[in-house]
Length: 437
Ligand code: HAM
Image (cartoon, protein in one colour):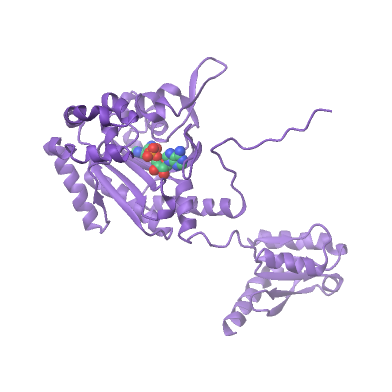
């Protein structure tokens, strides 16, 4: 006989079930509701794409591309990768399906949710398979679109009951401003080169803006007096950034300007933003969402020059924050009815009854293993069932059973043959008794 094998889930992944998967469903359903109000429809794109798609969009010096890709050769020798983020695939789909056509309505506003993959060192709030709820809007450079996108993520997080959030805002200007700023940063940092952390020394040449983002305290000291992008902005970028701020203020969306903020992916220009929690329990994973504008991606993938803007929320971090802030205590999937069977002679009638109630839209559970009546009541309580219907010989004979409200203890009879017609009135009567108590 072969030895038994024991498997564990891969490092940096999670299994979600029961209360957790229920909470995830709520978080996702609320995103669908809120985004729909703003005119966003869902897009679903493949979980793997050509490696080059990500290399060309995220930037070939970014950590995501150089260190964290789950890439592989498929059986046809194609270089593929599991998606590390959602934007590149959505842009590819926008171009490939010609969603830029006027018949699709512009700006084209869409959202997505699903797993992303980055080979990172697993730690609190950092996983190898994680999930994003993301949004992209194409076809408008209007600052009001930036304002709407930022407002939407804030309103969504607010609607889940989250507090202590901070919106950090910055601009990266246009390509020209960034090139000039990049040189200014190199000139400023060069004299300190030997004192910078090893990571920052490499970044200094390849992507000096990322040095601003270093978590190393010594790097942070050096960076403090570095020039800022604001000195290099074109008039158009400056006006855009001011209009975004004015719009957010008009909507009473709080934000702070953080001129040291950069993003880990290279495709951004002008407005960038992050939503962070100030809750200390999420230390190291405080960034719940991040995003910004990108100008070149649609054209780079073969479409007409079209600007885009979007963000993505890290769902694991969002859920951890909901739990830390006590916003996750909501009851897992509620059970309306538990059917208690007095003996196993009524098993078939119980199933008929359960199915009739389910057809009416109620959530119904029952026992399948011949447990005692007492144990079945215990199970009903454990599942937090609202009502119990007890079914025995006597009920089957008389064609009538009692609906018991476990919250108030009140009972009301119902005719089994008329259950669909009578149940709404029976429940109304029980609710009235519950409020009277
Ligand atoms: P990002 O900043 O790389 O942006 O990721 C967005 C969010 O995903 C982060 O703020 C974080 O909450 C979550 N996240 C990232 N990596 C991990 C991880 N290893 N484990 C857990 N959570 C993680 C993007 O991905 C862009 N595509 C956002 C965007 C859309 N920009 C424009 N449109």
